[in-house]
Structures are given as structure tokens and as C-alpha cells.
Image 1: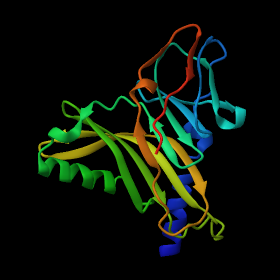
Image 2: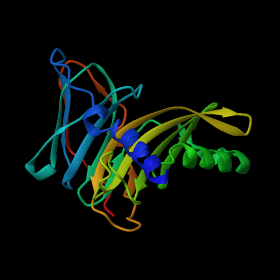
Image 3: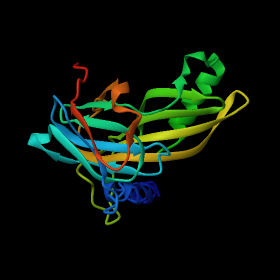
Image 4: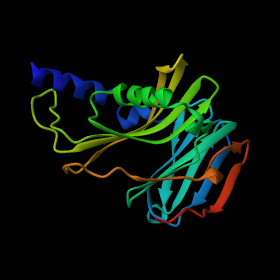
Length: 223
């Protein structure tokens, strides 16, 4: 029964595979975003302000140059993931959650943890609040045995980034939506580290119209 359950959980995880996470560029849209990073990247992602669409950039120059072609008009926040295990993000999550009372904060953490039981570890990198809404940028890892539907063992860990939306209910919270923005296999390791996280306001709130926005060389924090 346990094996069957794990297989079902894995099948559910595959439904959020990277090919389904990302939105295809719109050939009719002439806008875009270009820039370069001081560190080589594995992923450069543009999250549109409503969090319904996530675009993945084309990388060049050994991962140090990125280009989002054919972006529709709108505002975008970038998430940049380096090959060295660092994530930089400019997501609009609202005000810092430091003003929450201890019980509300504890319940918020419980809801984040309980939101997905397939991934056995998580880190809430940043929590923001706006009124009775909370948005959280979460990294999840599964480093336990994963069985394919065939019964074979997947020789990998899984890592995912998502943006969770929770609504306040008195001093508790209820999850309303989640948007996966990254899901990749990692080499099998016991208790792998979460990525080092930096919030970078300059890569958020980027307005795209009918031209390609040139960001130039980004100044990113160094660990």
C-alpha cells in the first residue's frame, strides 16, 4: 500500500513537469527583456504580475546572458537561479510579514508545511502580506525514495519553487492558490541544502511594452 501511494504521489508530481510550468512566448508580441548576470544561470524566469503565466528565458554566453522574447505587454518579476545553487528574485509578495502576531505566524508556517506532503522538506524563503492575503516564495525538496509508475526507482531528488497564496481566516490561514515556477531533478543526496536566497528589488516590477527592455549587466549580491 505504501509503495502504491508513493507511486501515485510521484505521478501527481509529474503533472507539474517543467514543460507544463512555462508559458510559450507570443509571436505577435514584440516586447521582451534582455540582461546579463555576473554568475552563470541555469534558469531565468519572468513571472507576470497575476502569477498566471511564467516565461523561461533563452540563455547564452555560458548562462550569463538571458533573453525573454515575445513577452506580452505587462509587468514582470524575475527569478534567476544560478548554477552555484543561488536564487535571486524580485517577486511582488507584499509587505514583510514581521507584523503578524505569534499565533498567526505559527499557523501560517503550519499551512505552508502541510500544503504538499509529497515533498518532505521545505524552506519559506520570503513571506509577504497584503491585508488578509499572504504570498510566500517556497522551495521544496523530496530526498526520499521516489518510485515511478513502472515500479522502478527514480535516481534523483526533486526540487521545486512555487508561490503560495493564503487567505487569513481569523488567526489561521487557508491556501487559495499555488503557482509552480520551477521543478527539476537533482542528484541523489541525503539532506541536500536549500538554495541560498536573495531578494533583489531591481529585478521586479519590470514593465514591458512593445520593445525589448534592456537591463544591461545586473548587480547581484554575492554570497
